[in-house]
Structures are given as structure tokens and as C-alpha cells.
Image (cartoon, rainbow, N blue to C red; front, side, top):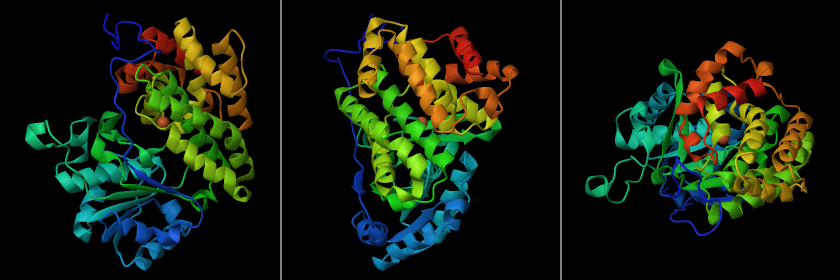
Length: 403
Ligand SMILES: [Fe+2]
């Protein structure tokens, strides 16, 4: 059987037949960076900047301060779109692209969490290439030279300033957007979607509510764990995943409990989220995307609930998969022979200490919603990269266990 095929076991060790790795976003991290936003944006070719954000973040005054930083660098803010909802949609991306066109923008600046940054990515693609957001769906399908075989065409310069430490969207080439008419979330991924610049300053998460810090931090933890056990693993990503897990181990609870007082923990969580992100995910994300699409469960909360169940199931699949979880266990000082159970219990206890729900019934998912969730999980692209192949019955069982 072919290595990497969904039909057979994929080697999780050794020298891989093939992988590719790219991470092309310039990252600047540190203290007091917001006042030099314009200076940095100028280096990316931005002159007429269109800001994408949401009303809550705008209300904190953070956007005003960043705008002042843009103007200080001699650039112009030509418009602000602050209508991005918690779970953004294709319609929102289209509206945002049209507003940027009307404003005469030449570049985008996203200030917000995953939903804001993903909206800015898709709006930028629509702004640059035309069409609408629904047309952008797919992996590596953006316009290219030479009838689609050559170099992908750049989109307008996009800078991201994340205000949560979790999604890692500021350094990823993927976006996930809801299509409300179809009750699905579509995924868009290609090299031009890597933002040109990500600015990581703990000032942006200073007033983040603990509940959101906890949920987004668990999203980062899920990326690190799923990326490490994915069939699409790579030594490049392994190094990032394990360092992300060490930083999450040392900083997540601190950042949630001490919030405003602990700049170091908040700054380190912003960096950990960058290291953790990958498009090689697995069944936790496959289960969580439909929970968001059907029942509005926040992404990080859904991941926190599903993660232990998927670990138990995957680790029982083969010794090779269990060995991958053993590497993760080492980071947390867990060396029990039943690694799946031990790691899953450790994570459930962490989720509980963080004050997050541990069951789907606590977040409004009814038992009769399971068939629709199973269908969504089976159809989600991330399920193909899970180390153990899951059937409809497997997913139904995992959702029931998580209920
Ligand atoms: Fe995620």
C-alpha cells in the first residue's frame, strides 16, 4: 500500500517519501510594537491601509492606538471595517472586500482573533482577484502563472495583529469561513494567504477575558498535538509542535489566571500559538468544525471537549501512533504505559482547571444533533490527515462519549 494513503497505515517515523514546508510570514514579537506599525507596514509596500476588526476590539481603544501608529509612519488609514462576527461568513468577506475597494485601499491590516484574520485573508483574495468568497474554496487553487502551473499570484499586502493567542492564523496560509446557507465551513489554503507580517505584542491580549484566553489557548494546544500525530507530519513541524507544547505547559494557566498582570505569560502564549499552527490537523478539528457550523460552539471550546476523546481513540490504533503520543506525554512528565488514557485524563483535568466546559451537552449540543455532526466530520478535509481512519460509527461513538 502506498505511503500516505488513507487506505493504509502511514509511517509516523523514519524518512518520509515526501513533504513540503513553508512559513513565509515575517514575525516581529516583543514589547511596545504598536506605535511603530506604520514603519513596519511601509516595508511591506502598504500605503493606503484598510483595517479589518470587530466592534468589541474597536471598543477597547486598541484599534485607535494602532491607527495612530500607522499614521505616525506616514501611511494613511483609508477605511475601517468593524462588522466581523465571532463566526465569520462568506457574505461578510464579500462586504469587506467591497468596502476596501470603495475606500481605494492598497493593503489590509487585520486586528483581531481568528475570525477577523480569516475574513481579512479571504476579503483580500476577493479584493485582488475578483469573484466572491464562495469561489475561493480549495487547497492550492488560487490563480497562478502558466495556466495554473507556475508561481501563485500575490494578493495585496496583509498584516495581522492577533488579539487572542490561539488560532495562529497570523502565520498560516489557511482560512476557515462559514457558508450560512449551506450550514458548512469551507477551507481555503494556498501560499499567497500567508500574511506578509505578523506583529505579536502582549499589549493586544492585556484585557482578554479569561474564558477566551482559555479557549483560544486550547485551540493552540490542539494544533500542536494534532500536527504532531498527523499523517502529514514533518520533522520541521515536529520541532515547532514540541516547543509550542512546552510553552503552553508553562504559560497557558498563568495567562488565564493572572491575565493583565502577567505580560510574560501572555507574550509567550502569542508565540506558542505561532509555533503550533499547521494545516496538518486531524479528527479533533473534523469534529469541531461542524459543532461551530450547526450549534455555534466556539472553536477552541469544541476542540477542548473533543481532544481527549480523539487521543484515546487514536492511541489505541497502533503502537506507532501511541509512540507519537508518548513524545507528547514526555513534555508533560507522563510516562504511563496506557499513554492514550493518561494523556487524555491530563488534558481533561487541565480543561477543567481552565474553567472550560468538558461536555458537548454543556454548550447546547443535543443528542439528536449527532447525525448531522457525523456527516460534517466525515466531510471535513482534516479527517483525511488523522493518523487513524475513522468511520461514521467511530465519529458517532466519539460524539456520544463527548456528550
Ligand atoms: Fe483550530
